[in-house]
Length: 137
Image (tube, rainbow, N blue to C red):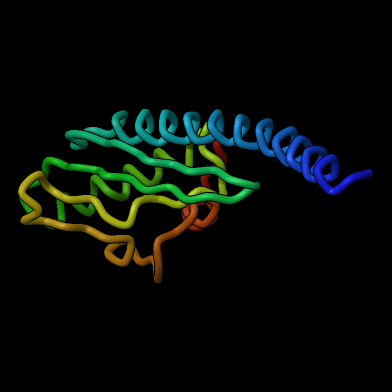
């Protein structure tokens, strides 16, 4: 086989393998965005929730922007805890996915992080389920 034919077959093989994988990851990312936003918006006190998710080769990341309506930090903490519990209860959210780093008011005068809920770092949904004893469904 000539060098040109080998290059052609290699390109065809790579393209044939990578297209289905990326096609699947697009569906998972869309599921991620929809599931997180729906769970967050089901909580009283959430003004808006948007997500950006990426899935590639079995891994990825999740970034959420959750805006809450709260008069003080204590009220914002109550809303954020309800949000992470809603994520944990959702059967559409995978345990390996991460919760948002923070919730905030529109003007950012109040910002609540996972640390305010007693987590050392941003927890995965699995960690939230374990902490609160929540089984999705």
